[in-house]
Image 1: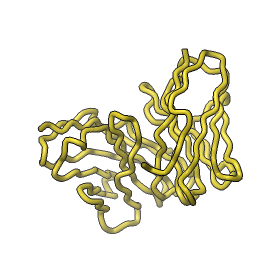
Image 2: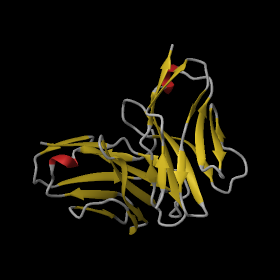
Image 3: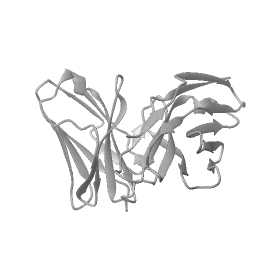
Image 4: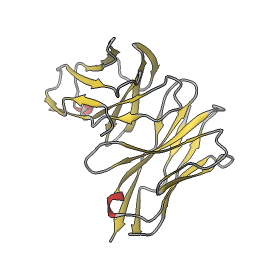
Length: 114
Length: 114
């Protein structure tokens, strides 16, 4: 079975600073994908970034980057130059190649302080 | 706007009743996923359909069922509702069945069981 762990229930960051949200996972699948989603207070789930287990380079999407350390089974999200609009819940998820099931972590609540 | 639509946005009903939630995937997406997000259980994968066929099953109760129609829209049927079924139900869609591609979430249906 797959497992996703987000150990930081809440994080605070100063506006314009960078912040790292932690995510570790456990899977027996040789091929899998790791995802980060943002859920603002309005409730919608917004896809942020994706990393494939065989990708050699860390994924980046604008101010978001994924610090993927396969041996340590971690996929931390780095948000650079935080903005007030980044305040939200952030979920890490894993999607294995087999079984097509997705597992989400419990989320990290990020608050950006002006 | 992810391109995934869900109706209704809000639903209030009583215990023992049956409801149907509807989802239209993004144009061209063949896979539809259903998730339940509750305060105590977090975000739980329920079921996936690909091009009309059930592809993966997660933590879906026997009282719940789903289907995907030829026009690719999907419905999630919840019956014999209990107070604990109150949650935000998300539908997501993706282009492929293989699992390793990003899912785009709809705005969700908030179900309240009284």
